[in-house]
Length: 102
Image (tube, rainbow, N blue to C red):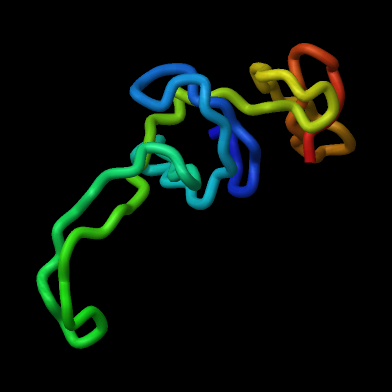
């Protein structure tokens, strides 16, 4: 996957289209990411010792990686990402400004 944890991304399709957020977790096996404040779903929870009342909570559900684009930290635009080898080390490169992404 070309997107990592703590990257800023733009959602390009779905109900949260054109919203931005930070990646909280990546799930490479399923090619999905969880973004803070995006794809919020209400879920009913039974009462437990931790939550004696139970009730309805809001959680963030995973989104497919194909539905998000990385926002380049240098040019602040949604961009595609490529890889480049530098001194036997693989680095991510922004396709728009050709700068290295940390």
